[in-house]
Length: 222
Length: 96
Image (cartoon, rainbow over all chains, first blue to last red; front, side):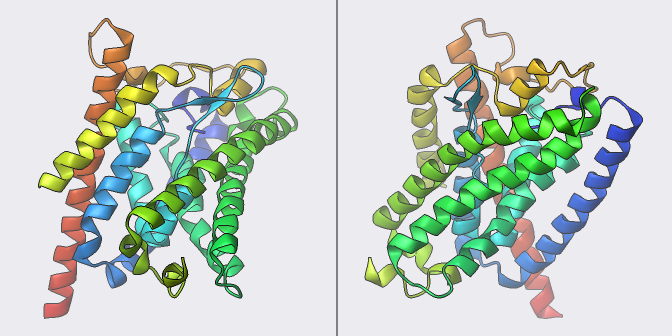
């Protein structure tokens, strides 16, 4: 879902890209402030290693229909592991390295990509939290992770459709349905991979997730 | 330090095993751009290793693996630096 600078080609796109830069930087600053309040040294290894893993996982594209492919975005995965604010910072690092070294996602379009993947991904934490508020069953927790992963990809695709629309002669009428169709399928992959990753981590090292408020009281029951 | 080395090795193995199976089809967004003929123009920045190919290594598989490992280490280091900055800020905040 990385928007390249090649798609920022007229004034409308450029204005949109600059607006998204401003918005994303603003939200980044807010999450930085929020993250500082709760950040503890003990999360260091988890932050560094899970970010590095998400970078690697994004390189593995799985084929979907119509000769197209998708890959894990990992926003919801990081949000479950690190909480919303640190997840936004972590995903921004991943996207930053991709844009800087590999031209995967543009520099001008970086604000857009940050919003579509890092910010939506990080904030998806609150959807899981809302969904699991009333139930502490492990099954429902994992279902919520799946649903949230799918929604975060779809929401990213919707916003992307608006952002890239100026580059298409058909505009939004072309980008929105096609982005939704493809990402509806990619989102299922995202949900499946995220739930597999989270359940494996719960099994291998329950204490990693134990400290998160999201999972309080849930770990002991598994 | 040791745990970061082990983590890097595990992620590198993950890449070595899975990259041959990775699909080279365009991703969802690229597919939309190709199908509906967005008039893409040249980017202002083409990265150092565009398309995840490590400098001038000819073999595509090794080239992608090396680029991947480079990226993994870069993200890992960036994560550690971020963490360092955040905890040092924290200490200063407490002293005040």
